[in-house]
Image 1 (spheres, rainbow, N blue to C red):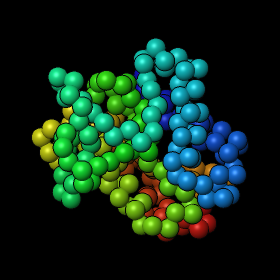
Image 2: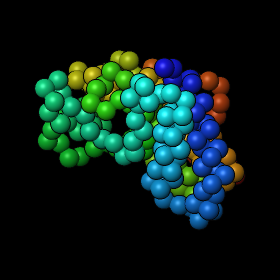
Image 3: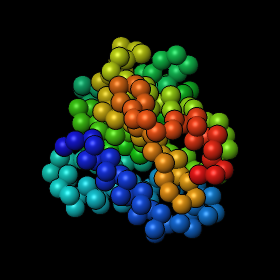
Image 4: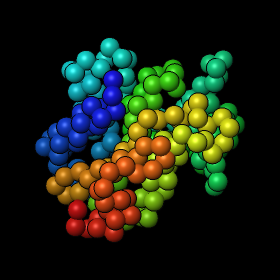
Length: 190
C-alpha cells in the first residue's frame, strides 16, 4: 500500500463528492458533513481497489490513541508541542478525516483537513500547522511520534467547482502547488 495510490483515490472521492453533493457546496454546508461524505466515498474506493485486505479504515473527527497497554489516550496540540495524554482538555485535536488501521499506530496513512471557500476564519493556518505536526518525523514531544506518525497529510480547499489539494510529508509541504495561505487568500474565487 502506498500513500500516492491512496491520494489518487482521495482525488476520485472528492470528484464524486462534487458530482453527487454539489448542493452542500452551494449552501456552504458544514465542514463535518462534507468531510463525512468524502470519507464515505473514499472508504468505498479503498474497499473496491482491495485496500480492505490492509484493514484500512476511513474515520472522521478521530482524536483517540492508545498506549502500548491499550489504555485510551486523546490527541492534543498545545502552543508549542503536541502530545497524547489521558487527562488534558485544552487543545484536543480531531482530524477531519484519517486513513489508518484502527488499534495500531503503525499504519497511519493519511491525515486530512478541509475547509470550504465559504469559511472566512483564518484557522486555515491552524489546519496547515496540524498537518505539519501530524506528518513530522521529528516529534515536538517525546511521546508524539508513536501516536501521530502519519505518512502524509492532505489539506483540501473545497472550491465552488473543484477541490484544491496541498500535500504534506515529513512536516513540510510537498509539490509546487499553491500553499494553504494562498488558497485562503483566494477562497472567494476558488
